[in-house]
Amino acid sequence: MRIICSLVVVSAALLAVPVQAHHAFASEFDAKKPVKFTATVTKMEWINPHAWMHVEVKKADGTVENWMIESGSPNSLFRRGINKNTVKPGMTVVVDGYQARDGSRRANGRDVTLPEGRKLFLGSQGTGAPSEPQK
Image 1 (tube, rainbow, N blue to C red):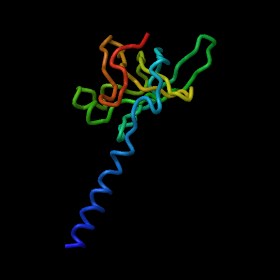
Image 2: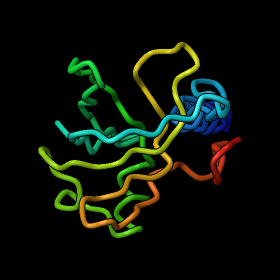
Image 3: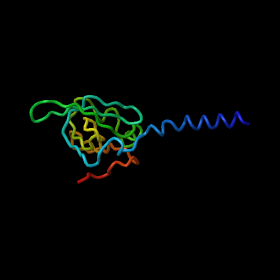
Image 4: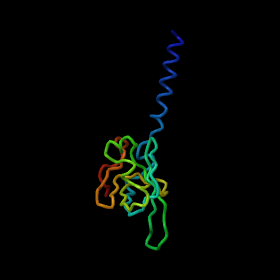
């Protein structure tokens, strides 16, 4: 009986590790640092726990900044109708989200607007991310 109880405890601990690895919005991103820019998609990474959109932002002075935009999980994006053919490299999009607390060129994406004007919700629900733009 003792061995079975030990196995149950070890199994429960191992299953809990992925849950602990998931972060709250406020641990990495700042709701008081909204970002909104037009960008060119360079790559989409459909990985867990969050998909990542890589984009290039052309600045007014002609320089280019590379940004990483965190999205919801691939599963949540698929359930919203977003798939590997929705956002493709070379596409020009408008990104709306919140910058990383450390000031790096990473953001938690709330919305992305596609070239034809369709707006997609990219955010992760239940992480504390704002559902509306902060003022």
